[in-house]
Amino acid sequence: MKARQVVAVLVVAAVFYLGLIGWRGVQLLTESSWIARGMGVGVLLLPVVGVMVVVRELQFGRATERLDRRMGEGRIGEDAGPELPRRPSGRVDRAAADAVFDRRRAEVEAAPRDWHVWYRLAVAYGDAGDTRRGRSAMRHAIALERVESAV
Image (cartoon, rainbow, N blue to C red; front, top):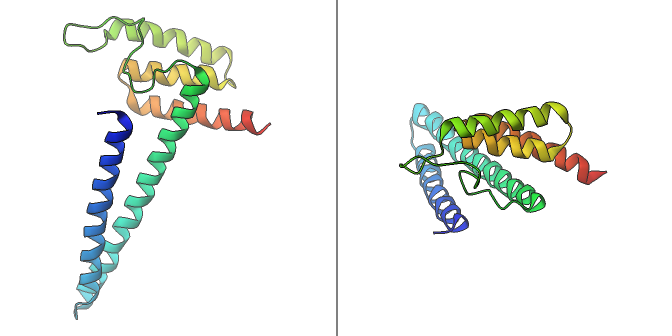
């Protein structure tokens, strides 16, 4: 399955479950007990938060794809570039990923306002297995690219 199809299936599943949760919240609001009504209000907040999270993640994915197209590398959706060797299990060799990461970090230190180097750093974080920092670096790259595009 292609990435977009997987995302579509996951979004449909999330909307379905958020709808079920919302329906249960509405049912709780119709109860005579104040405790049940209070729980109903709380349960109704869950789909609102869920929708906000899904929308934010979709926006992040779209912005990441836009940066990927602008970079011309076509690497988003892959876990490593051709320069990184793999172990027999198929995972990226950690030592090689760390070496690339060190190079990318030096590029960011040399040009901290360039979204291109932040993008490459985010990919290197992903290759090195640090998804949290990779997403943070990608968000920074997206913000820098938006500023550049606005000028």
